[in-house]
Image 1 (tube, one colour):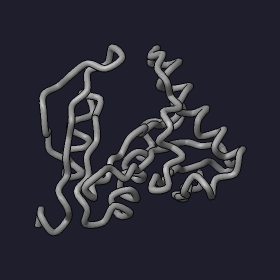
Image 2 (cartoon, one colour; image 1 turned 30 degrees about the horizontal axis):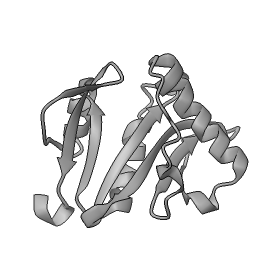
Image 3 (cartoon, rainbow, N blue to C red; image 1 turned 90 degrees about the vertical axis):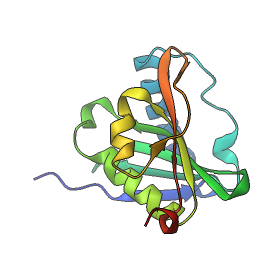
Image 4 (spheres, rainbow, N blue to C red; image 1 turned 45 degrees about the vertical axis):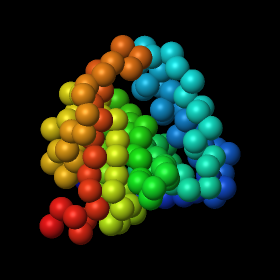
Length: 153
């Protein structure tokens, strides 16, 4: 039986060069290459002091899934760059990472820009559509928001 990967979390300053390289490679392999969206993947937000990087890796240390949590103004957390390696899809990795991210966010409101075909996935995690759909880099997206835990009980 395969081992269940653990969730790792780190600030940029705590990431070693190899880990950051491997996380970026996963993001670029999926978002730029697989989804054919040439865009500036290195947007400067990875290195912000409040950015938290969360990922799962396999038994060899290769990343299976990743996301980042940005600290937006007004105490809002922004989850983005949610990605699962093609060979690891369907294994519940995105759900495990999102659960860890929401635990890290705690009671703060949280936003994300969902690829529109994933609205149902994020809705099951307490997110609601917060604006009209739009197309970014040729892919339909939907803005979503989840109010703080105390506000949805």
